[in-house]
Length: 320
Ligand code: GFB
Image (cartoon, rainbow, N blue to C red; front, side, top):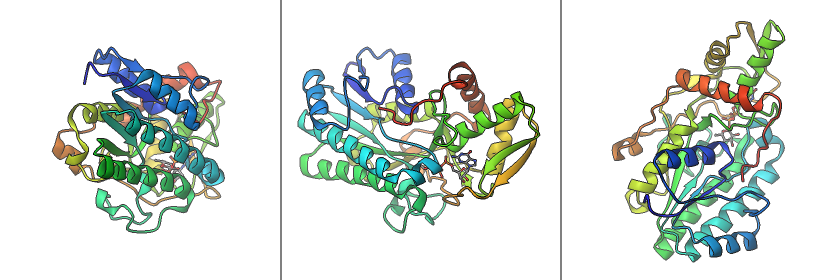
């Protein structure tokens, strides 16, 4: 694997940048990346020309249109259109250009809103989805099924990894578009800097979320590149910590890391989303991989990244 060329699609995003860092740490010498002006992954002809030129041996598809609960709820058309286009183009190109292994990344929101907890992979397509992110989830489910169909019909080795909610360096801190952890880091920071007595937290504070550092997902991606094959797993495999907290507890953990000690107030005009979605991570653990970065240890590095790079300029949500 270390000699293969690896195309990391979405290398400027939270996940892709972590995968590149991990590969570089391991001394991998042939990492292929492309910036959006040179390669628009939603354009079939761009993707075709890129694969023809670079002929990657392996691919990590970390490019996706992603966002938090509000972005998903407000712009479902963009989430389903862009994600279907990106994955259709890349998955098909991987087959036509003989890519040895593809790691496709989905999300824990592919599972039904009221799935058994912790959620096993077998819960896929057993119930209705959470409405706030249904469009995104349908696109990701289509990606899983497309990889499985190609494996079945063409004998490809396309693996679908389903990570839980992620955070870390390179995150999106846009107040309306971001996921909960970067949103709270930013808001707690601003509350501290401006001496506010209250921190606004969306929803009721009772939903539970499992949060994993992007470096842990990157380590799982490298593990998959090195050690996993599609025939050894089902149609998808969960990647998470197996531990979740309430939104209130997550807010308190962020406040501690940021050094802010005001009062939490809940804005119940904002959606709660799925009540709980902690992943059953026993399948990947049995194959030899576990997450290592506990939330209290991971948040300070995310906060440092926010201070260094994002305090003034929010990143775009489209990570291609
Ligand atoms: O990370 P998040 O936006 O998305 O988290 P999901 C939403 C939860 O955090 C809800 C609460 O319970 C919100 O009420 N929350 C509290 C906040 N304060 C905030 C805040 O300031 N910003 C945000 N964003 N939430 C995502 C999907 O669902 O899960 C994506 O939207 C993706 O498609 C991801 O699948 C894994 O966890 O609800």
